[in-house]
Image (cartoon, rainbow, N blue to C red):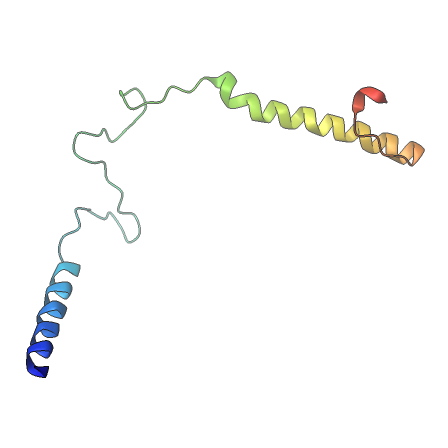
Length: 93
């Protein structure tokens, strides 16, 4: 019984080590740089059917909202330094 289990374990170990050394489908240009496009996927995305074509207004929404937030925080801190009371709503200043 032990010999049978041992032989199964040896076969499993051999098969696992064989599959671990199998070709993984990548061609590495250098160590750590193994990206390559899948078959049918273009090497350059811009201008292809996979290009997401993001709207620049949508991309700039976050930077605009951050600038507005910083302006409100500046008003709040100036009011706090002047009066010593913190007011959250900038419209109340």
